Length: 177
Image 1 (cartoon, rainbow, N blue to C red):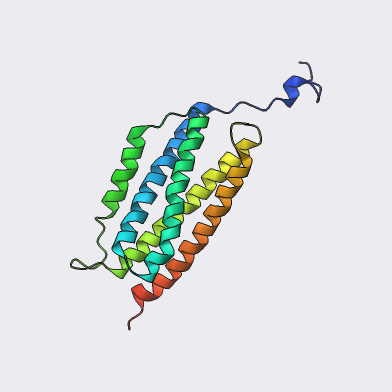
Image 2: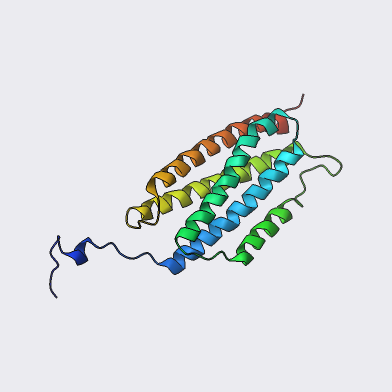
């Protein structure tokens, strides 16, 4: 077995990305982004005209833009969209609406708390996805490291906003007036 010199072309070449696995990974994130944007739209409709809706509106717009950014990254990487995963994401989100939260006639404040928790978890997953792509950007020139840094920071801010709103909703959901 021969050793490669550190400055040889083969030694400097980064290992190739397994595009098959990356395609699965990105399509799974697309399914999650699809479910999260639908859930956010549903929550916004549920609390229209409230301070909560006003606080969530910019996050909702960013989440929709993040999904579009993911689709753009997938196009640059030549990763085909697996429609069945997108449809599954939508179906899972809609099934989540069937969850009983202690009120049949009107919307329960527990529903809002649960939705904020789910959205915060989704943003954590999105952040992990952006960070994974950022790691890959060190060896894959098709990935824009600067743009991924922006998406990472935006996800952190979205998570902080959702967590703040979630903590406020705890008071609404569990404290008796």
